[in-house]
Length: 329
Image (tube, rainbow, N blue to C red; front, side, top):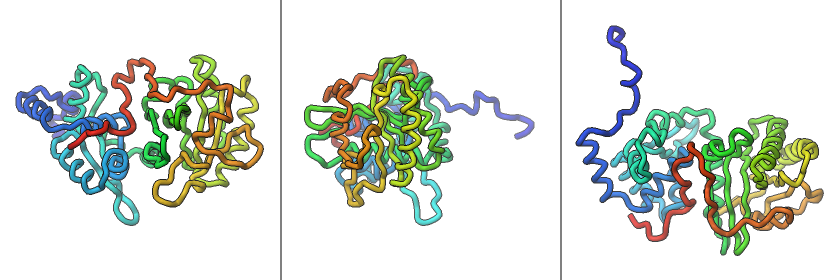
């Protein structure tokens, strides 16, 4: 009503302090499995995941995943939306619900406000102009985490939001990962390109990675994933110009790949033979596991999950890319 406008505090998400809400949260302790809690941590870390992404990462069957996700929505720990599509219907997109945020905060011994969660902000990604990019990044890491090759594993997957909190003053990758193959592992930053950004802007990002290496002593390869081979070829020209102007070329290893090269069959993965280091003058592609041989000056990463740097903006530890074994229902 214009005569009695809402005050700003009234528009904020209420903190669940009522006895009924507190009892509801207490009942969740008997309802949530380890896999459920992993899902909550994943949607909090990556902001939004589709039904397909959650299914292939954490479930053996789509029907089982859909049933459980509906239960979690009824419990209030997850919320969902479906973006409008010109043709067909979009899958359900899942974000953290208010009850789920309360669970994560309680697990970490935090007040809900310390988690920085707001329901309107969580659901606001449905209208974000970056939704397609966020989903593309999450699809990329999901495919890598479920690579069918033996003795391979995605040990770490940190979101662009965690990367921004840790290193955003110097560089802003779309994600950080550690991929292990056998006893060797590769740390990397992902630059996920949809072809909407000018190539000069993409190439200029190398300056930030050079600053990151110099200021934080963090030499991590940058992987650029483009939609087409033509885009990749043009990107390599722009990248090489910027790369050649760096003070120390070895501090910013770069490799590129194009989505067109990935297998069209089910189970296609960024781990396939699609990568071309920027230093390479030929056209022979190598797998993700072979990339460390292109940069022998970089110490090999340990085949264990990395410890995240401390930051007041990254209160919760990053979740593992796959749920714990025996998570059950």
